[in-house]
Image (cartoon, rainbow, N blue to C red):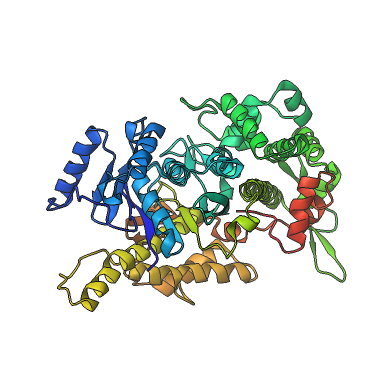
Amino acid sequence: RRRAAALFPADSAHLLMPSLSAGSNALSSAKDEVEAYDALAARYNEDEIYTSIGPVLLAVNPYAPVAACDQRCLAELAALNAGGAAVSDLPAHIFRVALEAYDGLVDGPQAILVSGESGAGKTETIKLCMAALANISRSTGSTTEAALESGLLLEAFGNARTSRNNNSSRFGKWTEIHFDAGGQIRSARSTSYLLERSRVVEHARGERTFHIFYTLCAGATKQQRDALKLPPAGELRYLGQSASLSVPGIDDAADWRAVCAAFSTFQLTDAEQTSLRRVLAGILTLGNLAFDAKEMANADDGSCVSPASQASLKAAAAVLDISPLELETALTIKNVGKFPVVAVPQPPEKAAVARDALAKALYGSLFDWIFGRINEKMGAGAGAALGGGNKRTIGLLDIFGFEAFSRNSLEQLLINFANEKLMQYFNIYIFQMEEKECRDEGVACPQLQFADNSAVMVLLEAKPTGLMALIHDEVLVPNASDANLLTKMNEAHRGASMYRQMPRAQGEGFVVLHFAGEVAYAIDDFVAKSRGAVPSELSQLLGTSQLPLVRGFFAADEEGGGGGGG
């Protein structure tokens, strides 16, 4: 049976399910949750952040450097292992999980699933796990270095400050580490999913958009800023929504220097780095475009870029290497039909939606491009070293934890859906499979009590009336709207145990009773976010850009390759 490790949210702790028994059960005598948390607190106060619970390992985030997370600790554990210590003799630690996965390669591919609520320590856990695997396998070289250093770039482009965490991952990641016949790392590949692209154009008060925008504004040289025609950060609308452009404990200028050093590690040429800066500046400058209503003689009123935004229009067009007049036209005019094509003026609010869609698509494509460059470096020299397929593989899944904010939207529903799937897997692996194994072996097994989330999974994924199916179908119909979608949800699930309508006092939306608690979702923008498409006029225009990086993004889009990322 394939072994796996999984990390699941539990308030301030997150759970890691190693492939084999985690050794001594530190909480075996706990009679209830209160005693269990008291035991965790006692260990936490001694800087013992890892605790075994049968086949589960809890890691409680210390929010401070502790010896257990030090590289010297990894080296000491590796020395114990090299000296002949059995896995069962090692203390509860992420190193032990990595070691069990590594030893399990003789049986086939392994998986380590990492999850937890925002701030639980998922990003740091992944880093430690990858460092442990490099240590255990005694791997060195450019591929190993790239795998270990990829986190810096991915955090810069994929993480942001939220109300819960100054360095929250706003994307999910699956990384496969491939080993050769000698047991050393020879290549790795990462795949991203669920990038929170909407954060590019909007975020809650007190939060920030992705780190890279602030590091660029703080760290770029004057010469670079002048070339990018980039105004001060405080004058940029996409950044100006933040309560504060700076965050205590975060040095954006120093982080920019670290990012630039990482560009060199991943062999981005000077020209590519220049293009990357231009795309980032283009996104920020697009955000400053405002639109005024414009009277039309033979059609409904349309819109135009406001006089106050003309400088931003020229700056955005310049860094994206397209015509400012054509950019304004593509934002404010929609072509309908084929024979003949009818130019339909768009009102200011629709022009603003098109502007934001373009900004999100540019960032999503840039994020995917960064992933591609990281993969190129991590896959260097793999080829013949792997041979015979990729059976010697350890996968690391870094998944958002369950989210419930004061205002929740489509992003939170998708994230929580993913966590429901993981909880379902957890139930099957930990409880149902163990019960079956006991029965098959004739071993008496007491009836296990656990939170069964099958009802909410039916609500979310059943066809044709599950929430995901209804969202998908609504996007495809003419005149789709959030109001119509909500009506269909309410009609399909009236009286359902896991669903109810949001109280009118809270706005328009619905409530789902998840395994971790109920969450109210505001229905606003569900349809627009689900579509996520860039108007064809903008895709065609950007596909003619003289900047190869941008042209490549939208040429791929025209060929059906996505071009929107995330």
